[in-house]
Length: 330
Image 1 (tube, helix red, strand yellow):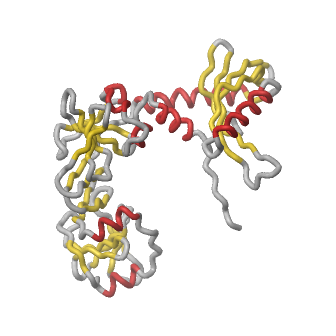
Image 2 (tube, rainbow, N blue to C red):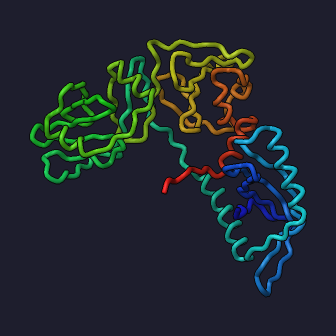
Image 3 (cartoon, helix red, strand yellow):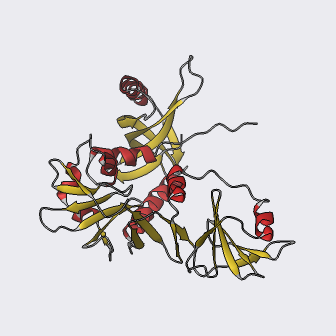
């Protein structure tokens, strides 16, 4: 597939490309990615370039076995030396420029931490992008809050908000007020809800609903950490770390030097002296070295994908370049 250029120096171009392999006995292709370098032959009159002496540097096929992956890499390595790939010089320059701008944009990303709520009892976080924006629903006195991914409506005659999560309903006179569970919402609210298709509720949310959760509404980006009762900690052997063992969140305490808490939220790390905050963004090169020592058989092994320099982090970057496919029924 179309290569994505990464660098160009001393007439050597480095790039990556999504690839697929399909054997005669396969019903579907196996997708992966290769990283390669090539020498450039440039024709400035026609503004075309040719990629010659292609050399495969690395490959990754997540859905293939280790032996299959090695076989596929050898296959591409053998064939690549004979490839003559052509592309427009202008296209190459545009790709390199876009790649440079992308790196600058990553460096300039704002790292302001989200608001982090901590609770020791069941709770669910509801995000609204600013003050609720109400949109009339045709043929009803009920209005929909359109700036939230959650299903929230406002019953104008009762001046009350209603929130539906799974099969449960909650009500509050104010969006940021105290929400209470209701067994029977007003008929007008049920009528408009009947027009909607609701996706399945994730298991963790369903578990929270069973515990009569507190509903927390935020008008700004926010995250929620919940522990099952007061915080309990377990030791990660050989890492000098404790982790919050009665929570689904990835919270760690660095015990050797600072006793600071660290949490990874949406792939980014934050630090605080207390579980109640305030939290501060932590750049990757400022993370405690102990985090990279988490063993692969630890219950928290999955966070290694968010720790630069680890094998898991490198694999996560590689996997992000590989296309995801799905069947579309016709």
